[in-house]
Length: 429
Image 1 (cartoon, rainbow, N blue to C red):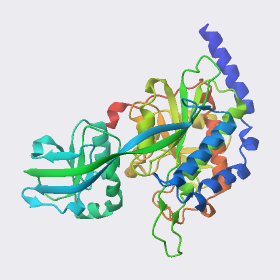
Image 2 (cartoon, helix red, strand yellow):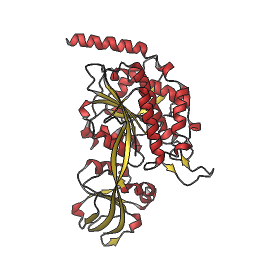
Image 3 (tube, one colour):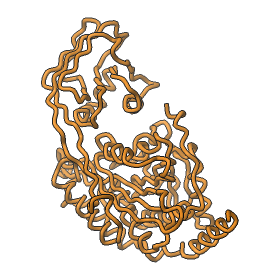
Image 4 (tube, helix red, strand yellow):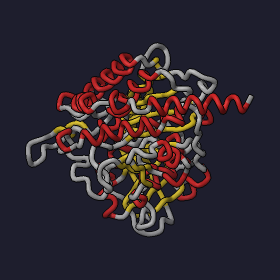
């Protein structure tokens, strides 16, 4: 029986390989550009969380999922609703070693109205220095079971000023994190914070394409985040809209395009999940919530797509995969691209810890082979998080080829013939 099953899957994959030329005709530059143009348009005003603008983007994505024939996630809705906790401190008093800390320089993430720490024994202390980044501190806090006091030097405190204001919004947790600018060894601590606590609603957009074979109970996820930075202070050109064309309307466009492509084929053996995440820009909260709703043992792979609109450092027909060395998923994808001229490379920006800075991280932390595909030159992207991130700066033909290559490279995983190795969660601590 096992030989017959393998023979069946081999024949299925062979048939899929013949049909794999379809991405060249069914995934068109015209359609990809039209989707990208709307998601990154001024009409959506930068898709900032907690605004009507991101709600319009969510409605558009849901309508596209419905038009493609995807099933709603649950209850007849494509929206996956959840709440973030907003804790706005109105009274902060912090002293370390008897030295009073300026309340304006303190960042607080808590679900408690009253926070009282009167000893360093009650917290874990994390020092940000040349060997330890703030991203690593947040990772340790989210994966741990303790209160964290994070000590920043003055330069780091200034660099993180914009981010620290987002600490007020977070997933509910029994633990708290406080950041303070402080140099030295904390021997004594006296901290009292009072905050106003409120729930703030958000939503992911999720569509399901059920599998057609014995592996239909296994899942493959294609994802990207649809939020961005909204409207801010005008730049030198008078532009105030952070359009987020590359970050990450490009990834969301890829998810919508792949949803229609696979729905049109109607031959996926594993169940496919297409997810547009919210709140990535303020802490990957959409994917964090999403990850809690699945049995990770049943998720065989996650293709997270982030910033594929510009050419990579290697030029056209190439992209990189974050955390490439953590599983054999990249090798599987490249095998399926043999003879196409497209190349997936390992992440060349490992010092920037990109594997933990996008929505793949939430599922990778529980062992899922979850990786982000990107082309963004993280050492040289002139419009990253700037108003100039508009569709006019993107290479739409190359972006379309990348989406086609993702479709083609995923075929053996979608069909259940290949299963990537799991992420070693012990190596993430």
